Image (cartoon, rainbow, N blue to C red; front, side, top):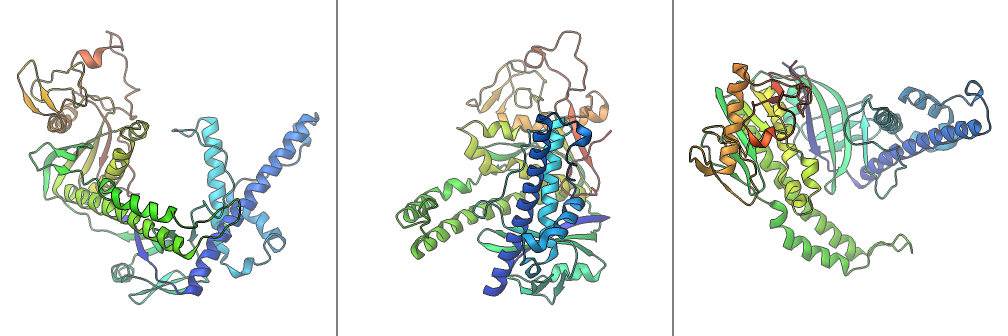
Length: 457
């Protein structure tokens, strides 16, 4: 099957190459800010003319917000705006303008209601201190040179920390590099290649097996088939003492001050780098653990059922925010989505309002309330007593039977809002009586874009 994959490698540039990389990222920021200034000035001019009573057909022409319109205007004035533009690749300026066009489109769609989710604000100017340093190349010389070097437009041949032999093998087999993105991340430069390649369709070890996965904070993952649960490693808690010590060490040294323009001392730079390395290690450990968990599940089971957790809402709870963020619930679901496709399985995501923890996995009775402090589920009807997370995992696995048998309606959205209200009314049914299971989203087979959960009509 045709798949889109990303390969990321850490770079080992020389001092001159590192300065060139920083210059390219600065060019992205300059182009973005220039385009945003043009758009804001055009909007302000048109608004002022309206206030003077000028009709709409005689207003200053609206500036095109498309990437091509902005780039055409940039090419006309770049000699005046940035006389040094020739020192960087043209792709860096195109990258900044493309990001501005996307930001403006997102704001417009959010304002008009075409874009779902939280409201998107109007783009703001990027600063050198806060903006992420990255640049994307889509044209020009983008290739590998041997097993330890990459070649990028204008930047030339750059050494990598690790061998790129696996990607080189794919390229010899007919794969194609679509783009390359260079980013300053975790204290070093990285390059990510987006590759279009033919990937052999995998097959799970147990294609007919169904497993329900209940994610939690106390235990990261509990499974419905008796598989040993995965403990939550709590990487951030484990490194908290060291991070506090490193933060105190950095605070005792002369750091940068924007108000007085004080430059950081050498000791502060070393202390800050040590603190950053500790934080980057926490992120790397979390990422590695999630990859091991999701890869093992996708290669073993034909059907995986998870919950549609409201992670954004859970983070609003100040008592749970740090623990939920450290667990990485959203990343687990994202990786399962594309890994099940690569391995020939399917991912089912239960409706967000399905009471998996309150429902008895034996008799299907639903409790009215089940506080988080109660860790053992005890059913008053059939006498079932088991860990509440294992009970929830079993209920998730049972959704497959209801869906296949047709007793549970499939919905077209994550909230089940397209289901009709039952005759008894909408209020109180979910907590007082057992209701039919529902599966909101179904992911089957290979996906044209890894990581995206497609809807089953």
